[in-house]
Image (cartoon, rainbow, N blue to C red; front, side):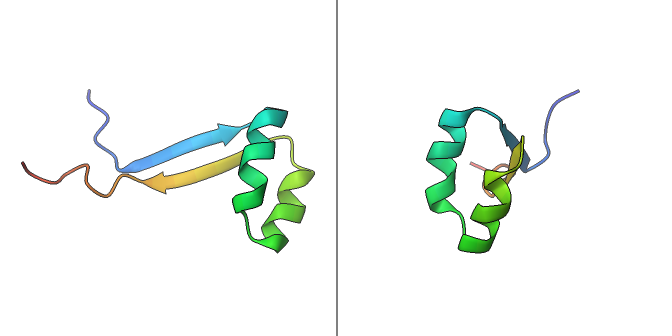
Length: 52
């Protein structure tokens, strides 16, 4: 079975990861994420199914 789904999920758990992530978040989301033990980052690999 191959992973052909365009969704990519990254779970940020480390303090270093949060320090890198927080400046890029909207202010309201930043406040919520600061107190969370884990923050998922969802992304779409838009070119995954593009033909060559």
